Amino acid sequence: MSQVFSEETHRNMLSRIPQCTGREVSEWLHAVDEGPALLRFEEKVSWLRGEHNLAYGHAKAIIHEHDLRRAARHR
Image 1 (cartoon, one colour):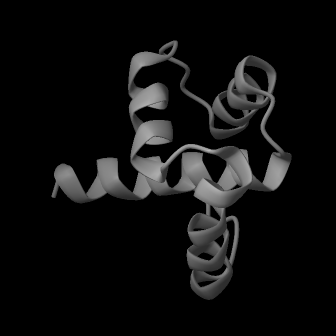
Image 2: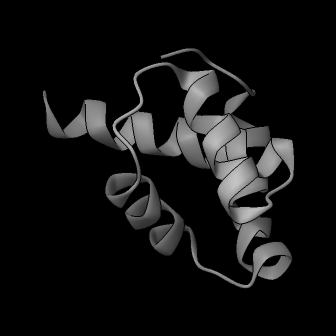
């Protein structure tokens, strides 16, 4: 997992996702869980962008959050 934004920038991006996309972050995380089993960070970002027409920054923030939560579950 790579750090794609500072912690503050990441939190700010997440807070704007519902307003910008019309869907809650939890819905996006579920979409990633239900999506294809891609391994690489950029593959996941590209899939979100292509499948759901998300902006690059929003897709990166969603995948980064997904990776953070997955890592926390496996501790």
